[in-house]
Image 1: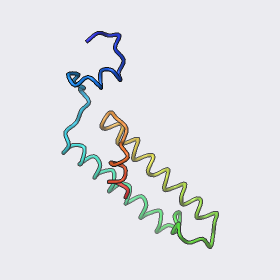
Image 2: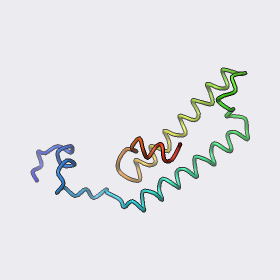
Image 3: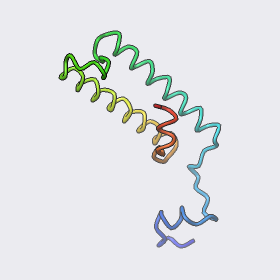
Length: 99
């Protein structure tokens, strides 16, 4: 394979072997670890009042802050996944981890 081929062309080529490919078992372990960390962070944030039930509309400002915190936590999980696997998380993987 020549140096001039783009990364996209290399990935689309079934003969190209990416050194960053991990096994399904490793991927599941990574996802489970991130999921557990995320659950612990959310549990602590809920107990300390940083997160309120997003369905409770009595305090719109607090609800918005909670939603932003949820998104931030999910983004950090996605970054960790990418750092450990060498690729972005797919939509189905995100759904599998976060529901």
